[in-house]
Structure formats: structure tokens, C-alpha cells
Amino acid sequence: MNYPIPAPTRYGYFSPDDPFWRVNQEWLVVLAGARAVMLELAHPLVAAGVARHSNFKRDSLGRLYRTVFMMVDATFGNAETARRAVGRVHRCHRSVEGVLPVGVGPFAVETGYRANDPDLKLWVLATLIDSILLVHDLFVRPLTLAEKEAYYRDSQLLGRLLGIPAPVMPPTYNDFTAYVECMFNGDSLTVGDTAREVAAAIFAPPLGPTIRIASFVGIGLLPARLRADFNFLWDERREKRLLWLARHSRRLRATLPTALCVWPHALLGEWRFRRRTGKIQKP
Image: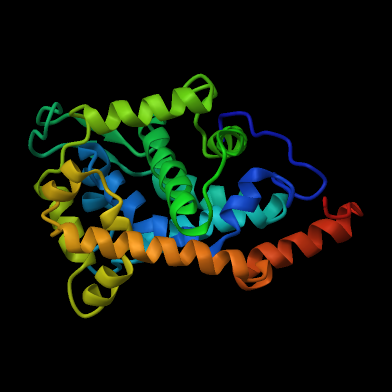
């Protein structure tokens, strides 16, 4: 790899006391996956790379599965586990490059794309960060601004591991939210035929109807413009159902012990971290 890798701690790159760990350990944040994938596909260069270089028609859950477990391994794993996880991402991306077969939005026909383009990698990571924080607020508990700022600072480390140069990452959480809003309101996110084709394949039988139900939250939390461009049906009744689910999820989460609500990987990772470092849990 031709970019500097940050040095890990005695255990890994994150610890159980880090905001990045505490937010990502909630298994409900997996509800962010569908939103993140659709936001990725809304970028024509990302959609072209997925369509041309993946077997999305036969492996509709593959991208989501790999993304989720890259985050799990990078967050809760030791340094070697984290390096293997991001190494798999780099190997998959190494040969992903090409040109747009048709013009989409502001991107002319034959515009080139590379999966290792830092700007595209930033957008892919941004879809995860933004979606995870949104789902945590709605389905686990609202985070304070200070918590979100701390989470974003931690996510910059993951960005470095993924090969995003520090100057490319927005320097602060406020800058990050401004970047995301600019992407939402600009024309760089234009849902083209390729993105709709990939989305249709994800929700195609035999697993598609089940995936569609599991993606209800992610679809509902998409910006309205993009949701409509993907031809996802949405109305007031569905909006009320989503808000009802979110409200009751927050109430239930507040009453349940943490051990029932977090990834087993996080519990095992914390046990290994405490054993290796001898650090007791903060009160």
C-alpha cells in the first residue's frame, strides 16, 4: 500500500471507550445499510463500478454484507483483524476502473471512474457515517453534538485506513455535514438507469421481497428526491409507520441491558481489549 497507515493502540485501532466503538456496537445500526447502499448507487460513477465489476444479480446482499463486516472487523477487531478487513477492500477495488457507457447527470459519456479515487471513497464512507448516525438517533437514542463530533473524529482514522488522504476528509463534523448536504442538494447524486437496475436486482425474487421488508427503514430515511428517483413507493402512512417503529425502538432500547443490544463481536472485542490492556471499563 502506498499511503501511510496509522499506528494502532496496544489492541487495535479503536477501544471500547471510543465513541466510534460505542455507536457501532449497537446492532440496530445495521438498519443504516440499505440507506448507505442506495446513497452509494445514487452516484453515477459508483453505480457504474458496481454494475460493471460485481456480480450483483447473483449476489444481491454481497456488497452490504462485506461493508457491514468490514466495519465490524475494523471497529472491534485487533490491529491484524482490522488490517485484513481493509486489505480485502483494497484488493477488491484494485481492478475496478472504467468509463461511463452513457452520460448521467453532470457526468458525460466516457467519464472515467476508479474505485480507489479518494473522492469516491470519501462518498462511500460518508454514506455509512451519515446513515449510522441518523439511525442511532432515531432507533437507539439521540446523540449530542459533542458525541457526533467525537464519532466523526474517530471515523477519520477509518478513512485513513481505507486510503483516503487526510486533506480529502472534511476536517470537522460541521464540515462533514456541509459536505453531505452539498451532495444531497447538488447534481452529483443522479439516479440513472444503471443505479435503478442494480437496485431492482437487489430486490428481485427469491430473496428480494424479504430484503425489501428489511430495507424499509433505510428506504424511508433516504432524501425524498433520491427515493423518488429510485421509484421507491413512499407515502404518509409509511412515514407514520417508520416514526412509530423508531419511537418504540428507542423506548425498548432504554430498558434492555446492553449485552442484548450489541454485536457479539463488540462484546468479545471488549473482553479481549480489557484482558490485553488491563484497562477497566469507565463508569
